[in-house]
Image (cartoon, rainbow, N blue to C red; front, side):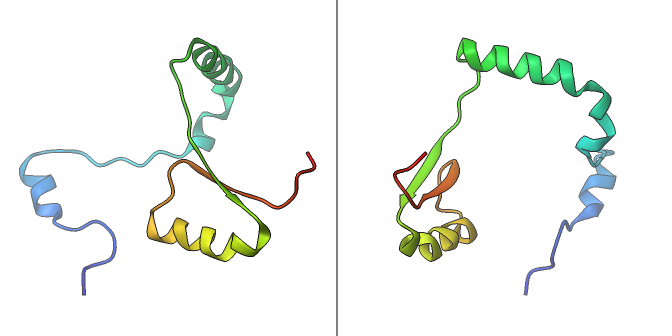
Amino acid sequence: APVPGPYNFSNLLMKRARAQGFIVSDYLDRKEPAVAKLIEWHKEGRIRYRTDLVTGLGRAPQAINRLFAGSNRGKLIVKVSEEP
C-alpha cells in the first residue's frame, strides 16, 4: 500500500528545498485588506469560481461521492428547494 502523506524526503534534502506549512489563522490581522482586495479582483474578473450544482435531496449521496472521487468541478451545491 502507498505510504500515507508526503514521502521521499531525501529528494527534498538533496535539492536543499524547503517545505513549510501555511495556517490562515496566523494572518487574521490581515483579513480586512485581503478581503477588500479579493472583492476588487472578483469585480474585475481576475478571480473566477465554478459551481457544480446537483438538484434534489435524493441525489445528495451521489453528490457526496463526487467529492471523494474528485469528479466535481468547483463548489459542489445540492439544491433541495426552489425557495431562496
